[in-house]
Length: 203
Image 1: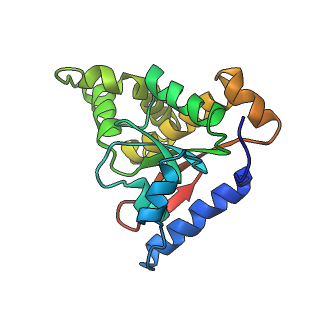
Image 2 (image 1 turned 120 degrees about the vertical axis):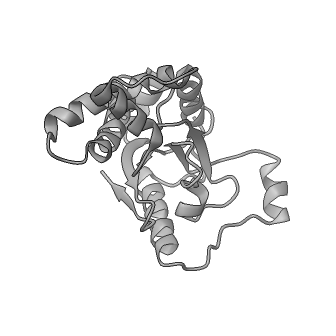
């Protein structure tokens, strides 16, 4: 597994925290998107983090973390859940690229989680593949419903959905993800993004 030049998992996490702090403060982004950087990346990539995020257009990982070209390996689907292709992409980022950090990022007012909540609470139906797409989120909604019967179900389900994906990557994955976690070369963390404040809250 390539590790030359990569930060430690904690260093990678701190880079994301610092980038988000700059984003919230409206400080100028120093992300490198220059021609020289493009030419350098044409020879290969070494992202410092893999981000499992939602497809929502309001949640742009590079922007909210102040990252430049080649710094984040991103897997995005509605509701930040991953299928076989998504899991394979995560595994590739660790095995082939030596990424030291995986972040599962949910966000407030997630439409996919809201749809799953409507299925649980209103027996809603959705056309096409949308219903099947949100099916993996249903257990998170039901768990949030049990734990927070009086709270905002969508927002609690967003957090529960992130926690379940983190748990899946930490405990129920292939050895190629479990082994580097056991020896401290890889960390998996969860977070929730606030659309209004720009803050990434780490779970």
